Length: 304
Image (tube, rainbow, N blue to C red):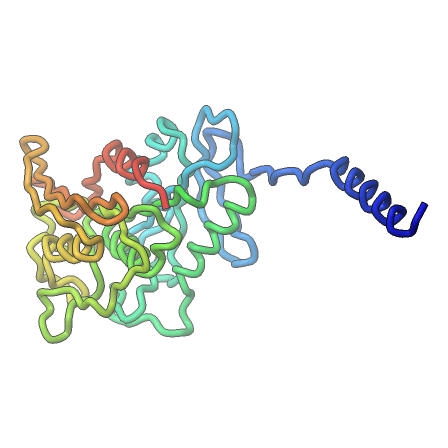
């Protein structure tokens, strides 16, 4: 046997040996049993969050993930109870995560949105925890643990959590498939020279973002018509129009009554099958006014 043939035979045998090796086992998601809510520490971040595992899931793997973000001064536990989304998670089979924000305030927390004052009036500094980094690390950790599908990650939140949800749409459009702020839709900071308009420089997502926003018609904290605190100012209509512009939407706004108390404004024919929708509920204020079923259906239609 020539040296060349001997080398070829060895290569063939090594190839067979490689094929005989068992495939690497897929990671097993071990964050809790179906129907339970657990406080889990996220990787090496040193921070924890509540995670609700939907009841009745036969295979705890590659689930959709929804973050629900509490309002300013609140907690993950509080918004988990207040939103009612755990029941929606059980019904539709998505993983639900309720983290605490990074900046402690009294008995709760506030979100770090750069350049935007918190309810204390102070603007977060470079020394404050980076909430965007934490939430994206949580996505990676859950995906690497075999728990979630990276292509189906969504965010919603109440008030300050809604503003944080909006911020995620601005700066992390490569990680989130859709957002649904509740009484908190923004499209960047108010323009300094004209606060009735969003500043385009402060919200420049890499990809078009599907948006479904909910608001209460009598909200005096984050008024639908604009005004309020310095971080608010421009109207919900202006925010929706800016998201529609970012999504290259060619149809809308179209307004329709969904019920006797809910009016919807919609932009369609956007780039990448994006939709931009706002729903305002008459007679409701600064509270969880979201239609959770409609929210999930909206999320379900969109993948990253």
